Structure formats: structure tokens, C-alpha cells
Image (cartoon, rainbow, N blue to C red):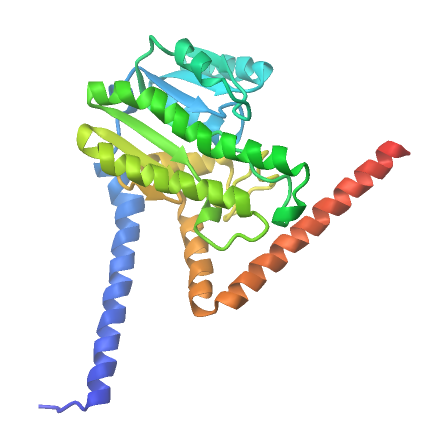
Length: 319
């Protein structure tokens, strides 16, 4: 029988630990993205006749509204533009043969929540998607943010106040019925170093922590809570126009994310985004300074291009 020295035993223990970690990761991925969506599939319509989506006329919000309509839910659309609300409502009614209700609200303003509460008072809302959010026009240093007070206040209201107040309006009736789904859209920027997106990333970190607490408090009362923390998605907010593996269309992203409801309470929603976030955080764990330098350089390049574009546009308008 072979006798192992100290270093051989240490190496064997490390190899076994590494093998266990790899197997665990593979099992988690397979369960989260393959097995879980099948065995934990949520019947959204059984949670309540209506689903409400904020920021529902573009991008991720619109796709959530369409996916929920495809699952038989009537849809409450809450957004700022009346024209877009009407167009989206008509599209959903025609394509999915469900009822819709539109509520015009600008989440950058105060005093909108009493109106929203009255508009939906008689509706059995079983699913709430807190999607509305506002980011920077382009990456910028904290003290150099244009129209600083208004921009920062708007981000706080649209990203933090909205999720808190809308949950406060709708959750009590869900608790009374003993069933419901709350989906809060955060951002992958809150999971990785995010220089030049400081306020936005911090707001989305609040959404993550808020969702975690609500889940802890109410999952035993029949409420499913999920926080989705996407990476880049083709949308008006991101400014990305061409889809790729790491920047999917909103439709592709939402199809993936909504399938994970009931399986995980916190998710990036899309497997390639999970790889991206884990890679960035692994680099940060090995060399924090290098990771921050790399991300800052990328953000500064984006900032430089945006400022040049704004400058050219301004000069063109003057001419």
C-alpha cells in the first residue's frame, strides 16, 4: 500500500476539493437552467387574474408583459408615455386575446402612488413586475453628472422609491390571498465593480437587498419573490442595438429569466450573464486593482465616445 507524504496528501485534498467544487457548480447550473424551470414551473394566472408591469412599453418590461399575457394573465401596463401605453395595450390584446388596463405615471415624480393605487384598487393582481428604472445617459464620474441634483433624485425615485412603493401597494392583498409573485428588476452592475455608474449601481444594490428581505419575510406566506440582475440587454436604456451572446434581445433575456421564477430568488436571469459576472468577480478576487482598472478604462472609453457624440450633435444643431 502506497504511503503518501504531507505534500502528496495536501495535493490530493486540494484536487478532491476542486473536483467537488466543479461538480457542485455543474449541478447548480443544470438544476437552475434545465431541471428547475421544469419541476418548479409557475402558473402565473393561478396567482391572480392580473399582472402589473411598470416601465412596460419598451425593452425588458414590455417583454415581461407579453410573456405574462402569453401565460393567460390580463395585463396592467404602467408607464410614462400615453401613446406607447395605448400601442402596447393594443398589441397585447390583439396577439394574446387578454384584457389590458393602462395607467399613465412618471416614476421620476412624486405624488403618483395614490393615483396608481386608486386605478388598480379593484383588480386581483397576482404578479407584480417592478421593472421601471433609469440609468445614466452615459458613464460619468459622480461629481460630474450633468444636472446633478435632478439626475440623482430621478434615479433614486425611479429605481428605489418605485420598487418600494409599488410593492407596498400590491403585496398586502397578495398576503391576504396567500399567493402572489413579485419580480424586481435590478442590475448586474450591483454585483460587480461599477465605477462611473456609482449611483445607478447603488440604487440597484438596494433593489437586491430589498428583494432578499421581502422574500425572507413573505415566502412562508405563499409569496414568490425574485430579484433579476441582468447584464447587457438590447434596449433603449442600454443603447445597445445589435444582439450578441452577451447582449441578447429583451425577448431572449425575458424568456430565460421568467422560466427561473420559483427556482431561484436571485438570478442574473441568463446563463451567459452568469459567466460574465463570475468572470469579472474572479478577476476582482485575484487582483482587485487590475479589475477596477480594466472596468474603469472600459467605462472611460464609453464616456469619451458619448461626449464626442453629444459635442458633434450640439455643433450640428448650432450650425
